Image (cartoon, rainbow, N blue to C red; front, side, top):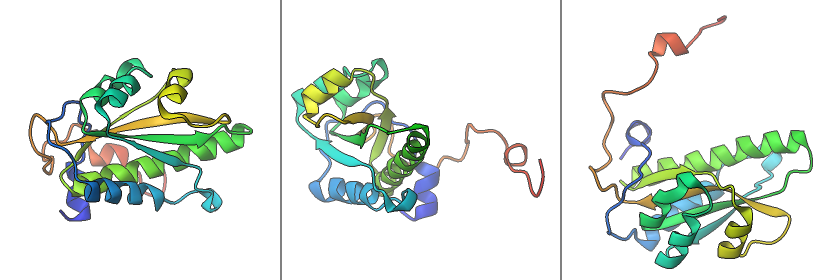
Length: 171
């Protein structure tokens, strides 16, 4: 798939088939996250790949909206350092968003679906993933093949009209 098509085909997937995602595809998705830009080349993320079914089921409990993780072929836990101040917190959220989106586009390019989730139960997350103190689970990305229909360019987009969103020169 071409990049522009991958961007237009990407959607949040919450139900997955039982088909595993190849190690090569998972590595490519992870590499996209690793290569994402960050403020001052900070690269504040660590990515924990989870494919074990029992571990996925436990990860799905870190937030009420993460249930889809249990049915995914894999999950990528995006772990970050605790921010030192408000400025670092703002940079961190932007940088993590860039890494997350890079992985979702890389996945869509391969025909692999993704769904993102937050995490509120940090103690549970730390117990499942084993990340050190001073770090937290920022986001989860479930990864797998969509159960409903393959990814394809979305032509009937549920978005505000272009001319309502885009302003040229001034509001």
